[in-house]
Length: 357
Image (cartoon, rainbow, N blue to C red):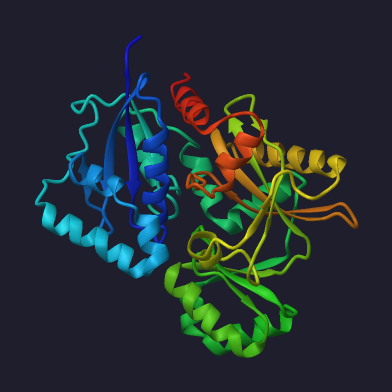
């Protein structure tokens, strides 16, 4: 049986760069060497691509440990120093000359999860894991995602979309209108970032300007969204034309909400698999996840997050992640494992799905 050569693409220009590195390290350590030859491709913070060499060196370091023991900033600086001292020529994007058969992008957030890299790979004629260009672009934008799934009959939280340029031009007016429209607490979110980067739960008027300043700095579009009561329930979906949904998982945040610090640094959130909701309600959540997956045109994989209130059987979609985390605490692989698909098999299935016609 011939060996398939996989380009494991990680890093990237988004604020989730370091999480991408940690996810890629997990995949590289798990991928079946008897079936696949892995070629790492690292995209630096500045957007330069490197094949092998420094890319492998970065995969070999324990970046998660650096983040836990020092800081995210120190982890980022460590990567930059490694690139600066490597003196390696950038990758020329000639995937075929490198012998690459299929790509596995592990790029969280902007410039990776949003369809740009997917479009580049399609232009180069390289199949890849995960969703296509359109689904990646739509789901990266929280505002557009809400419009699409609402059209499919799935409930979403009431929200308002603000352009950052409008906020900069008329800051006081927008702050005043938000305060009159939304009851505290509510969320302010960059529309196109993941891993809870830049998200603030606003409890009082004095917190709103700082929340908007931060979100508008990170993105050109910002979502102001009503806080929904309920359990945070997630479903992993796997497949192309006939996708399957995992068991439901639940996250109980250690802080006010499941933020970046709670996800990747403190690691104090509690995970419950299966979720602590009745089985009939779990089936409704799984059904809603599959409906959202199809409505958005997703393929390969997605993690679909909901707020669920078992008191009234309310199911509200929170967001869709087309390249979910693959760290040792990430819900997507944990949910699949609980559904009978271990990490190694999961990686293999994703690559097989990518190579389907």
